Image (cartoon, rainbow, N blue to C red; front, side):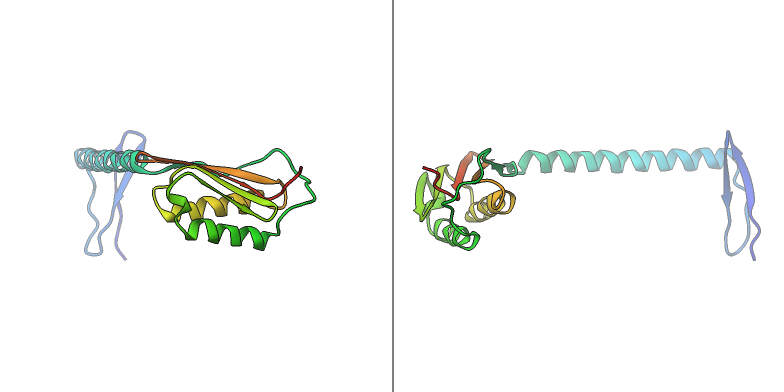
Length: 159
């Protein structure tokens, strides 16, 4: 069993042990150790901050779906039918330009264009997951690298 030695550094005590032997940690050694640790931590923190800022700058600006305030229409498409409308709309080329789709009682309107087809799939699914069953539809906004889109999906016809 190795013996531990202590060195004082202000209110902090440092203990250094080794499998070979215990060595005291002097105040000057403790100061060098702390300076090295702080320097390394500052570098890593600065690197992390730079990476985080870069990722934030290039990440798409997409908010979660916003549900309609209206709910309770009696003439609505089923959840499965709305997913079929998603497949028809995002599975084709409608996501590449402003377009609209009528699907039974439901309607889909896209103003603008998505950067990728996957953004259409994801935005449409967010509207379904967040709004279906509690509201009559929702809107998903997307803005990235010059492409912007406003996807409006209404599940019902309340007229």
